[in-house]
Amino acid sequence: MSLNADPAFWAAANTHLTRYGPDFESIIVERAEGSFVYDADDRAILDFTSGQMSAVLGHTHPDIVATVDRQMRSVAHLFSGMLSRPVVDLASRLAALAPGLDRVQLLTTGAESNEAAIRMAKLVTGGHEVVAFAQSWHGMTGAAAAATYSAGRRGYGPVAAGSFVIPAPNSYRARFTHPDGSNDWQAELDDAFSLIDRQSTGNLAAFIAEPILSSGGILELPLGYLAALKRKCEERGMLLILDEAQTGIARTGNMFAFQRDGVTPDILTLSKTLGAGLPLAAVMTSQAIEEKAHERGFLFYTTHVSDPLPAAVGVTVLDVVERDGLVEQAVARGQRLRNGLLSLQQRFECVGDVRGRGLLLGLEIVTDRQSKAPGFELGARIMEEAMRRGLSMNIVKLPGMGGVFRIAPPLTVSEAEIDRGLAIMSDAIDTAIATN
Image 1 (tube, one colour):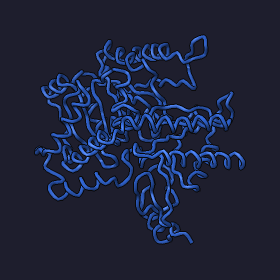
Image 2 (cartoon, rainbow, N blue to C red):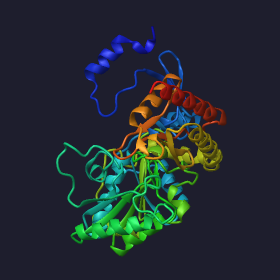
Image 3 (cartoon, rainbow, N blue to C red):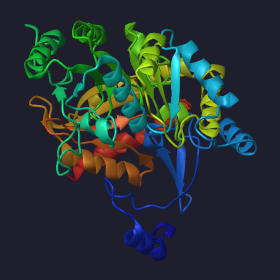
Image 4 (cartoon, rainbow, N blue to C red):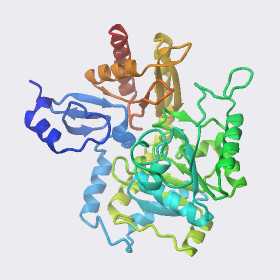
C-alpha cells in the first residue's frame, strides 16, 4: 500500500484542517529539492508551478538554506521600529534595479503589499475609488480582496466603496477587433474608461493591475497597453499600481515585467518571487509620493514589517539571479518551453492557445478550436493524468474561458526537466482525450 494513504495522517487532516480553496492533493509531501517535490513513497513530482508560483530558485536552494541558517543565528525578527543591515541592503538593491522607485517598504505577503499600496494611493490622492481588471487577483484581505474579481466575491457582504472594474484585454477572446480580426485593445480601453468616468464620483485614487494576469488565465497586457493605461491614470489624477507578485524577479525575461514596456508605475508591489518561497513582500514608490504620504501621516505598521530574516533571503535571491544569469535563462528556457507547448498545439485540437512570457506561460484547453468552447472537464482530466505521471500543474477555470494551465517552473529548471514535463503533458493529453 502507498505510504501516501497513511490513515492517521488523513484522519487528522480531515478532522482538523479548514478547507480554504481547491481540494488537497492525495499525496503527503515529505521533502522537495530543485524542480521536484517528493511524496511519502519518495516519488519525484516535477513542480511546474514553483510551489505557489513562488519558488523561483527551486526548492531548498543551497544559497537560501545557508542564508536562513546564518540569519537565524544572528537576528530573525525585531521590534518594527528597529532596522537591520539586511533590510537596508535589500531596499537599496531593489531601488537600484527599478530607477524612479527609490523608496521601499518590506512586508510579508502579496495581499499585505497591495493593502499598503492602495492605502498609500488613497492618502496621497485624496480619493478612494480603485479600479482593477475583471480577471484580477490581488489578495484575500480588505482592499486587496475588493480589487480581486477572478474569484471569491460571493457571500462575504459589501466590499470597499468605490471598487470599479474593467475587462482585461484577451487577444484569444477579443471583445473589440480590428477589421482583420486582431484585438483592438485601445478601443476596449477607451470604452472601459468612458464607463469608469460615468460611475466615478470624482474620487479616483488608483488603478491596480498585473502585467500578466495569472489567476485570470495568463492574460498578457499587449505591448503599448501599459503606456496607454498610465496615460488614462495621469489624465484623472490616479496612481498606477503594478502588482508583480508573479511576474517580478526575472520570471518573464526581464527583472520586472513592466520594463519591457518602458513604463514605470507610481507604485510597484512584489511578493511571491522575491522571497523564493519564503514570506517576503515589498512596496516600492517614488521619493515624491513617499514624502507626500509621510507628510500626511502614512501608517502601515505590521508585526513583521522590516524583519531581518526574510530581507536577508531577498538579498540572496537577487544575488543568485544576477550570479547565475537567470534573467537571460528565463528567456532561453522559456523559449524552449513555449516551442514545446506550440508543438502540443499542433498535435492536439484541444489546445486552443499558448500565451505568456519567459517562464510564465499559459495553455488554454478548449473542446472545439473553432468556437473556442471552454474545456474545463477535459483540462481537469489532463491535470489528473499529468499528476499520475509525476507532473504538477495548476489549471484556472473562469467563466467564459477554457481551462488554462498556468505553467511556471523554477528559473533554475533544466532543459531536460522541461523536456520531461512536455513529454508527460503529451501523454496526459493523449490519455485524457482517449477517455473523453
